[in-house]
Length: 108
Length: 302
Image 1 (tube, helix red, strand yellow):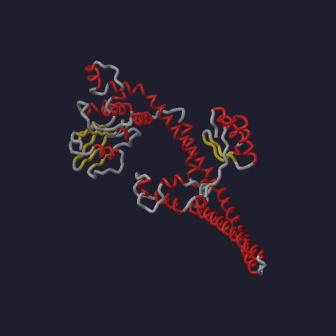
Image 2: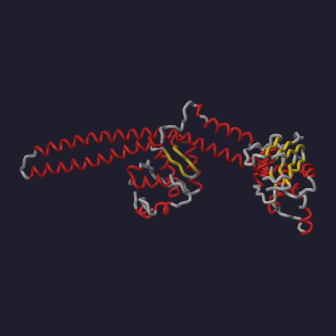
Image 3: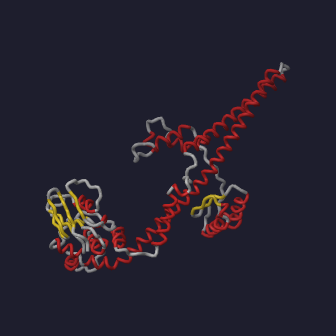
């Protein structure tokens, strides 16, 4: 992720020059292949722009490993609701659903 | 010049280019009938030429109407066949998008890599296998502890050793299964990435089409803007107001929707009759001449 115009420009150049290493790119964010070459490009950018380039390693999300079933169930029934305008907090109140506060406090 | 219009409301039939309908009727229903759209009033039927793209915006003009002027102006320009330098690119982008959306292109839908449910099952299986492996690792550790304890106490280690061996074997099987589940998940992920590439491409095309459409609309509006302002000035009743208020520079955007709609209708190629439910013209013939299109005037709009 780029935090300056110059860094963004470099990121775009890298993406243009090495399409094969880019999984996704949008604006000032790019997702690079999980290869040494991908890491090399990320490191190059950081070398050049210092803190104006942020490098994070992403990981596929597996909800069955990461969250309790109540959270998965809550997402399912909330998106299946009949009343679109109801916020989750009100939707969950009085039901057997996890309340938003407890979810906010629970780290993955 | 358009063919004569034939308009029926219940038992009343009118025919010509400048019609007056005195039967109480909803102007919007009549306008929908002009466009051949499904309409709520079964008494109403209109035979007329195919309406141009501006008709849905200014095909029905009445006092309390709303008008998205910018959109209507772009449609008016389009109705006259005004072209812009974006048109070719736009047609190209639309074509590509259509090709991408037609599943016949490759025989298979590139976005179809098993359903989301199936992918969830793979994730669930991988998570379950990992949990089971973890549990068995603890079982093995406990069995190892028991064996150690029996040895230290000088007791017969055989049962504990057998127990440990069995636990180690179960763990080994579970680890194999977990690795396989992980691998299956990886393969599915890899395939999903390809389908995401296709989605990404489609999304970018949609964005491009939307951008070009916006630009083309803006260019079209620009090309009729002067004419539109000129038309506004000659809408019946407008000049008098400006003169009496002594204010000769009236912001066109602050004019009543009816006035704006009449001006748009005047510069548009409507091809089909406009339904008028406003009192701006001396006669329906004047209105038809001023708008240069067929007019159906309602004297008792609902």
